[in-house]
Length: 193
Ligand code: ADP
Image 1 (cartoon, helix red, strand yellow):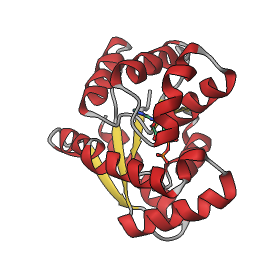
Image 2 (cartoon, helix red, strand yellow):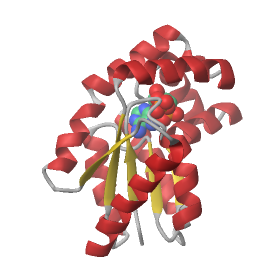
Image 3 (tube, helix red, strand yellow):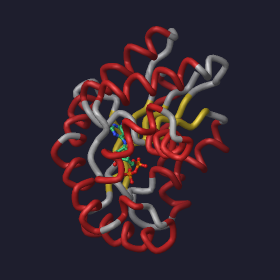
Image 4 (cartoon, protein in one colour):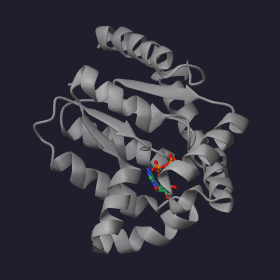
């Protein structure tokens, strides 16, 4: 198995790069944001619980998010590996992910952090607002999401760094150039495992 975490602030390009990585490595893509939005659309209990947080740009509580992620992993027992996009966003989530991987006799092999300056992230989200019409791309919600990233999610980086599992890739420039850097990083760590 090959399990990859794609990490970065909102607007870093996690979704774009995930699509390309799935084609390359044939992994199951788990975007927690997409799963939450799908539940919200379908009006499930989970969707109802998560909707208020998402639409306001606040992290969904760990208990809800971790339970949901376990459900998606369990539903994909035959996967050759996973790409986690937007998970983990807290240290408690990172610890839970390690537990779930261990239960499946596997591990998180590469954590790729896309580094994009805050200014550029804000610009990208402004452009996306006009293209995707996500309610949480409104300016005040974007501010909150970026704030959530820098107050809560950023602590996940030292968690992985201290275990020497973190690879930082420059997330600015051409999409294909960034992709090549990510695959080079994944291939070099995958060889070690
Ligand atoms: P972005 O990375 O652009 O913020 P996502 O689609 O990944 O967008 O996430 C959208 C929203 O879904 C987040 O603002 C948050 O409310 C919720 N969410 C997604 N993943 C998580 C997570 N791992 N933990 C808590 N909340 C999450």
